[in-house]
Length: 248
Ligand SMILES: Nc1ncnc2c1ncn2[C@@H]1O[C@H](COP(=O)(O)OP(=O)(O)OP(=O)(O)O)[C@@H](O)[C@H]1O
Ligand SMILES: [Mg+2]
Image 1: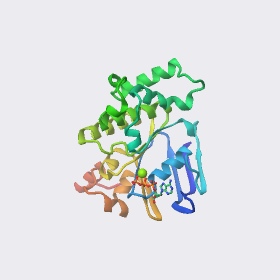
Image 2: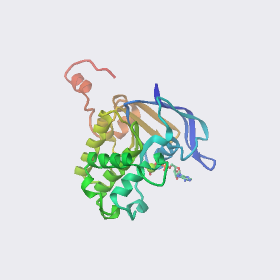
Image 3: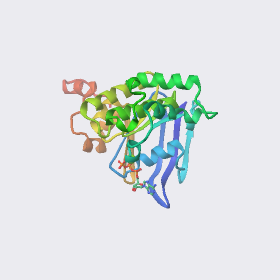
Image 4: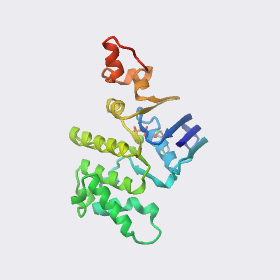
């Protein structure tokens, strides 16, 4: 059963359509990268998945026990977030807010926050102020926070923006590990080359159109060919170059 089914969905603001007639399913275990130029509607789609914005037509439905409020979300960075006056532990714990029934966090939630801080390598920064961290450290904190909200699905909006190549590679490795451990990933990225080597499926949004398929299909699509700078690195293509059979 699909985790998310999007049927004929259109999305936009105040009468202006940003995305129209989108049809796709997200299955458990998928690693989906959403690419497309600035303003193509990537964040708008994320907002609709999270219920922060309603589709103007069509539907988004959830299956396999996924509840919309149990989606982990790492938002696109803003200046306001960078200046957040709270400790690292407080920021991570705030990911449990959707599960909090009282004014206080439970022991179990505090343990989960500590586990996620260890997993993302920021446990020792717990008492530091969020705004004193480097960009890479901040994104790890936001990832640990998102993990507190979910066991199933992470939505990451440009998680490597502003990170240096090492921190970017670390972040991608961490996200890949989470996916291997069963968490479905939907990630917005401008790094198309990394998207095709990490993700299993690509959603490319462009004006009045979209492509949704496997990373391999994307590499061989007209839209993919325009955006990919390097040759297809997959085994099939290497095999073909050596005279083998190509399976798109
Ligand atoms: N709150 C809003 N009210 C009105 N229009 C909006 C709002 N948020 C976004 N838009 C418009 O919707 C379109 C899509 O914006 P969106 O933020 O989804 O793009 P994006 O693909 O995430 O871009 P980027 O790569 O720059 O993050 C843009 O034309 C933008 O101006
Ligand atoms: Mg965006």
